[in-house]
Image 1 (cartoon, helix red, strand yellow):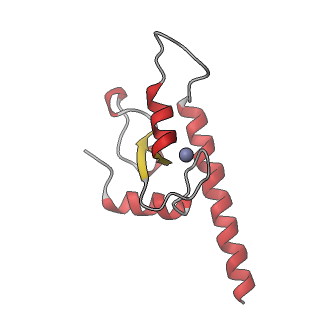
Image 2: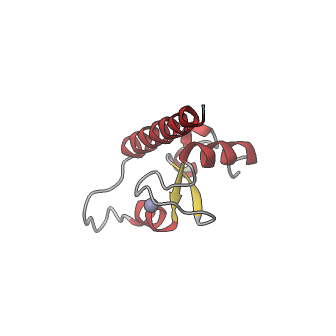
Image 3: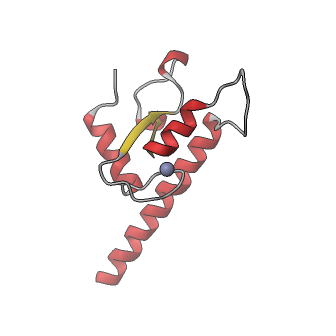
Length: 101
Ligand SMILES: [Zn+2]
């Protein structure tokens, strides 16, 4: 099962459609990645979702443990990237609201 429409929307709004790793604005070019893979028992919850650009999504997925090169993105790291980024976007939105008032 993919993520539900509600979870996708919540995740996309939380990140401002900016990638949680490289922070660039992506518009349509975003994907919601399962932090814990479905094959490993990951679910379709908001907590297991991280919005990424195509490039970062490819990076996160392409690591080959049989031929290690660089440092793999761990589940823990992805969660921290996402939570820090959601927080930053929330703060920016808050500041924008304050300016309007
Ligand atoms: Zn990215």
